[in-house]
Amino acid sequence: MILKKFRGGYDRNFCYLVANPEKEAIIIDPFDSKEIFDFLEKNDLNLLYIINTHSHFDHVQGNKMLVERTKAKIIMNEYSPLNCDVKAKDSEILNLKRIKVKFIYTPGHIKDGMCILINDKILFTGDLLFVGKIGGTGGRFKGSDPEEQWKSLQKIMLLDDKIKVYPGHNYGNKESSTIGNERKTNPFLLCRAYEEFVNLKENWYIYKKKYKIK
Picture 1: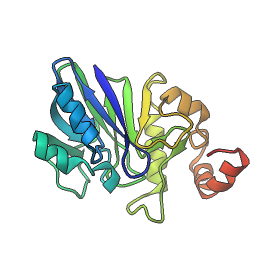
Picture 2 (picture 1 turned 60 degrees about the horizontal axis):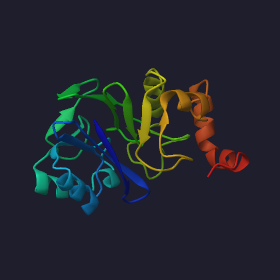
Picture 3 (picture 1 turned 60 degrees about the vertical axis):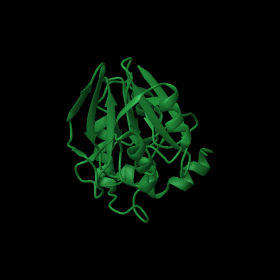
């Protein structure tokens, strides 16, 4: 299996491409980048699906360019306000040759948020979970809900510790992690109750300064 990471976009975004030996590919959260299309062409990959973890503009920027050039179909969560070809429901599975794609509904940062689990080994978390941090709620994040975010985080923490975590932005001290590492080290996942979680969110800047987190 091919796994390619692209860096760029609006704010240290990550875009990911997954392909099988048969040259079938999916791309997750593309931004508008010639580098992505050049990689597809150079490796003779057939892009079948564009998958967006949620509908914020920086995670869908590259959709139009890629659809025009490849005719790939767009998959978004069933609650997405944007037009797409496929509306994915929680726990639905898409099977390609040697690639199993499972859609996990994870609202909180936004109502239509979802994580993408590949072959039960790799989890693309979008803006739900970053390395050592989590996505924002409130204020400018329309449709966000901290209680739903808490529930979504608890949901993915039921997954196996060995599953690799690939977030939607490069906001941590490294680019990727694992479920097990986040469970043990992420301050938000160390919270024992929702009230503690909300308190940390409300005092996050104080916490970051105290523990010298960038």
